[in-house]
Length: 204
Image 1 (cartoon, rainbow, N blue to C red):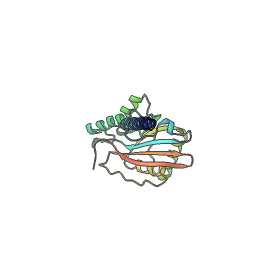
Image 2: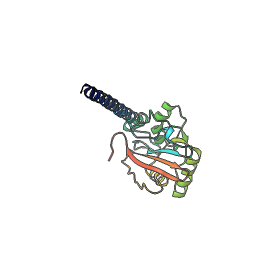
Image 3: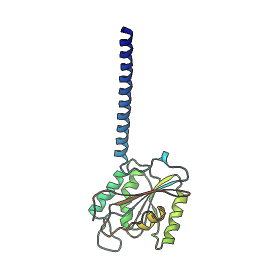
């Protein structure tokens, strides 16, 4: 009888110990997931999650701009959004940053570029879907295994997203919208995924 009781107690102790260890493992995993979510709220793939033939693109329109002149600067709200972009991508590995030659796109990317020690590369905005396709092909060819940020305009970002998503994301950006951000992952065979998110202060 004593042997049965002792055997039962030992079994119970082993079960309790395993249950505690399992519970601690779950808790540790949840903490790690929460840390990763906090440090990388947009869920940008890590370098270890990108193969040598894949490219991750982060695309967005420039931040809020002044309504004066032909090449306006960012407004105070736009500068806050540029700082928010820097914060959002602070813990994300970035290899290259591309903007057009306009003040509003360069100023949107500048805080991020300075924080990462990256020299901004300029590109000419494409006027046609064929030109957009050519630009994207060049970006993918030059950035295999890398993560790039591309800052564009309300009439160019949707076209780039369309090409990168193999026409699965057909979006429009109005003149008053500045909070859209897109993350795409492309391999040699085409689009792996494309998602649309928002960041910073919401806009109409």
